[in-house]
Length: 248
Image 1 (cartoon, rainbow, N blue to C red):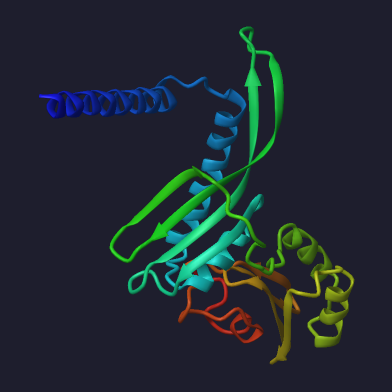
Image 2 (image 1 turned 180 degrees about the vertical axis):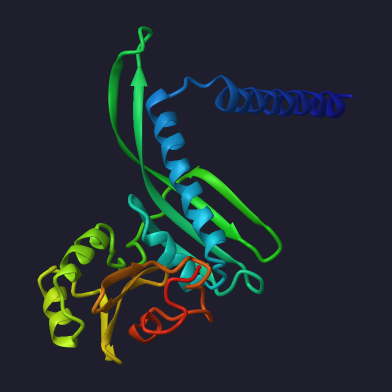
C-alpha cells in the first residue's frame, strides 16, 4: 500500500508539473504582453520578404547562388546563410535578416516610439514545396557576401537627351555616353554598321537599355522581362541594330 501511495504522490507531482508547463506555454503563446513596436517591425519586414519571394518566382530562379544574389539586391535585406544547391533536387534554405521599421502608437494614434529593427526569416525553397518562418532567432556569424548590381534607373531620359545631339558615328555616340557619367559597372556596347550606330547598356540580367542612332535621330528601347530571360535576346549593340529592335 505504501508503494502504491508513493507512486500516486509521484504521479500527482508529475501531473502538476505538466499542467504548470502547459499553463506557462499557453500564457507565453496567447496571453503574453504584446510588443507593438516589434510586431509592427515584423509586419514591415514581412512585406519586404514577400517582394523577395515574388522576384524569385518572376525570374524562375532555382539555383542556390541565384537565390542568394537575387535576395541580396533588395534594400534592407541581408543573406545570413544558405544551404542546398537547387530547388527541385536538394531544396534550398535561406536565412535572411531584414530591417523592419517598427512604430508604436498611443491611444490617440500619435507615435510613441519608432525605430528600425532587424528581423530574421527562414525560407525553405523546395524540394517538394516552399515554406517560410517569420521572426526567428537571428543566427550568429558573418553574412553571405553578395555583390550589388549596378542600376540604369534614371538613365533613360539622360541618354535620350545626350543622343539627340550625337551624329550616327561611333565616335560621336561614345562621346555622348562618356558625358553621362554612367556607373563603370554597367556594361556598354557601341557598334557602327551601315550608317547607323547601335548602343546597349546592361546593368543586370533584366536591366537593359538599347538605342539606335541614325541620321533621323535616336530611338531608345527597353526589352521586356520575357525577352531578356536566359536563352532569349541578348542585351547587345548587335540586337540594337537588328530587326528585333523595338519589338515587344
